[in-house]
Image (cartoon, rainbow, N blue to C red; front, top):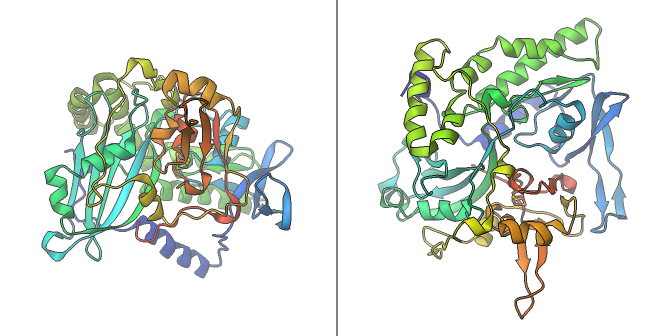
Length: 451
Ligand code: SF4
């Protein structure tokens, strides 16, 4: 492996716990944090973004203000930094309004599904990290796994499926469950207990998909801008650095008497930062996988990582492009065989509902569904005949179901929004781009201790 892929000497930590610790540090410095409220809408003044609406509570499931209704409040700032993680609902609005992605390649994503296990001493090897590629995915679908032994006899295991997969019958959740049955994986979990579950989309487009980073009144940070280094499967360091660059740019601007304008200096600082250099070195890894497939592409991609690293950023491939969005990559149901997944054994593998229970997801049921269909007829009229309605399969939380009457007719699309673990995959992968993930009321959602 090239030296930048080396992780020896690093710490293994729960990012959820790191964020909780960081929150305490920030509050100690006087930062106000509102964890029980979602930033639901941008606030504009003329063409500039000036803040966000937070904390609207008490609408009933039809969207009408209920007896405990409290309107949201506007939080305004001299500059607004958007750091919502992958496929944020505010970033989606801003990208469209300001055309931030118009000179970039389409965004690319993966879905990562993760479990936390606690295992007996005999199998626990603190500090052990294992990555795999391929199995159990078919040879045309890209993905791989991770395993970290850390903390109090914990093992974090997870599987990432790239969302440009074509077979609409594929279920990332069930691929992950199957992966745990490989003897080289199962032996690490022997005698252990699964204690937490979660899922989240990852940004995979890399440098080619990075949009314009600033707009009137604000900037995009971290995964909102897609700053993940895919071959390293790491982006937190880039997210932090982007926040620091933006903060320095805003601080200098405010000191100079500016507010609410375009922070061009942030993008300039990004262009000369180590974040861009790092993303530049690995820029062809993902497109090479797309062109050559996971097996040959893995080898060619590794060759490209080595040479680009040794040649100071020069690649024999130049800079390859991403051509299609992940939604457009979804194939037709008639062109693929449905996949029959083994039933979970309740020891190593589990079903979706018992998994969602371990995500500690909570949504007040008497609120409008936060998963909005632009056209409610599309799932049954378009997606079902064309693609077999893949939402049933790609959603790792069993949110979407197609229900039939007792004769097996009259399909109906049902959304169990209470189960949603906020992974954003539906917003990304729906072939008709008909689903908008929006924020539920009151900061509801999964709760990930030690994840
Ligand atoms: S509904 Fe969408 S965001 Fe929620 S868990 Fe399912 S795929 Fe993820």
